[in-house]
Length: 457
Image 1 (cartoon, helix red, strand yellow):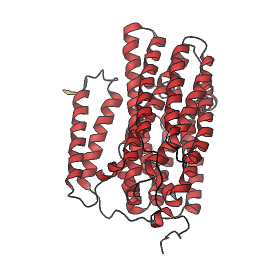
Image 2 (cartoon, one colour):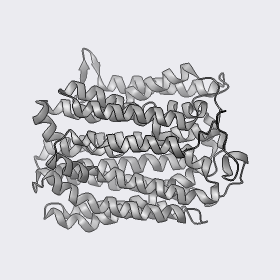
Image 3 (spheres, rainbow, N blue to C red):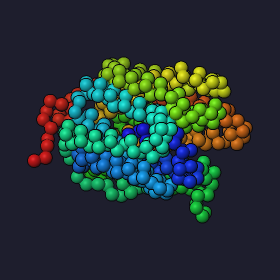
Image 4 (cartoon, rainbow, N blue to C red):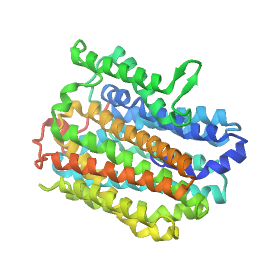
């Protein structure tokens, strides 16, 4: 549900504009509000899981997400919908880091790859199946149902989590770095807002004398102060323990994670717009075109996660990024003809995505100190979401710049896709530089599934 809701709105935009009598800017903010509220608090929610237990934070986030989804579907105006989407994003941010914490607690390193394979399979499938499901729901039932569909799934998830997921209490965090939280959230919020909405404001004034550039610079300064505060070591439990970046695979894994978020999100923004603008596919047909990508990604991710326990695990994301770049590159040559000729390239893209998601997560987190896993999960999820924001903003900016210069939507889409081909080269490079050895000595309770789980008395 979390990842589906990052893309499902795209195909519903025309219906929402008509149904809510809203402007295009209002509907763009429906997605922007969700992504902004989702990306910014991830570091904090990862640490909340360390303090109160991942199950409790996950359940709280899930309840918020379901109630916000109901409000979204019932919204009678664009402003109510935007506010509800922001709350929905906060619920998503509370849940996301906890999923990795569950996996690393319940599975020892030598069995973690298979679990991450399922996790990555769901992630890959959900990210790119939004246009398909959205197209079906909008066509058959109306735009409201892209939100109502979350409710039965969410209620079922609440029931299953309460029944089956152990109430593990790591209790690694006893107090919060309040200044660090404020600096981090404010800095990330300003940077993400500026990057995400820069093109909308023409990279100029937002309100009064304040410009997009000044907002981004202010955010970057706050983030720099945040890093210096964390490095000063004045807090025994920092929000961002910088020693975590001493782990080479984790650091490079986050670089690659930004790239996969950038490339995948960036791909489907211009592609879905192109096929509905030039060859005039319907929302449902656009979803059908991308459906094989999600199917192949989910299947490949399942097996790639299992293979990522082997000594040659790093070659999986290397190959995945190469296939992703190859598929996008072929699509740039095929634009202009029948949209259905893009299908083989989209299948290659799906295979590439599947070979990156699970193995990259396994390699990046497998050798982390279990005491840092909450912070690691927050950082890792933040990097992917930030990459997605950059991808959406970057391809949107390229589309508008080339379209303004040439008036040719095909040429604008081709330019946006070529930028993504270049980004995959960075992903390949980061994966090549990762260490081959991914083994980890078991370290007590956090790695041993045979030990009993502590439950509250």
